[in-house]
Length: 196
Length: 110
Image (cartoon, rainbow over all chains, first blue to last red; front, side, top):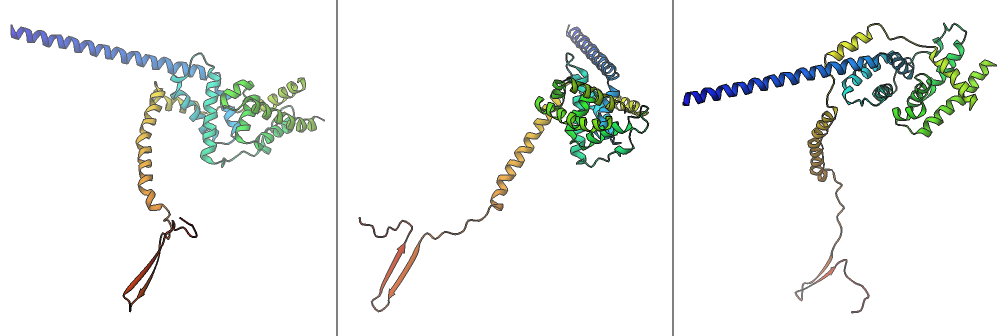
């Protein structure tokens, strides 16, 4: 009787362990599936924004070659923390706020020692002869402070609205409006001169 | 306002006229690096753990500061608390001692 009891007990524990193992395996598989779905969703959402994102970083860094590294860091960080992204939010604004943080970190790390592109060599191949105007706009942007330049390009390059820029950069709406107004006033003159 | 809109359109057009495509291989490099590590499922907990690890560090700094504080503290200048004047009349075997303290009140009647 005692032996039977032991056998039953052993068999019971075996069944229990096997069930636990199966359950663990199921959870692992489910986790893997979830991660796979999450990864696929991330790359799918990235596809339509990546070119705009890259150009925003590239221009915010004054055409520095370090833009590639900052873009890579942005995408990797966004990918890493994609699970914290709330699905009811705008992915485009979310990834640009990640880029904003990366640009800020870049300028803090390099202490503004970024090797900038020579603006005068830009846009020489503009088909409609607007090369000078383009250079004028980018020369103006190059003179701005990094966070001001970001606001400028978030508005004119990436097409964000003022409330969206406020959310991305955490700057006050009034300040964003002021920066854009200053940019307009400065460029009005510069562009006006060339138009005339 | 309309003038602003026209200007905005013009600036947008000029800014976007210069566009750079993604460098060759950059996307692949990022995808490769991303695939080596799965996305974090609970970033909050990660931050929470980091914050927890900072507590003993902060406590050690705090203790260190209080232990080393006396060594770096500026020494106070000695204060005169008492002036003692002593006369000795040797031939009469008398010693007179005047003791002056900060609480000594001059020209004050009892």
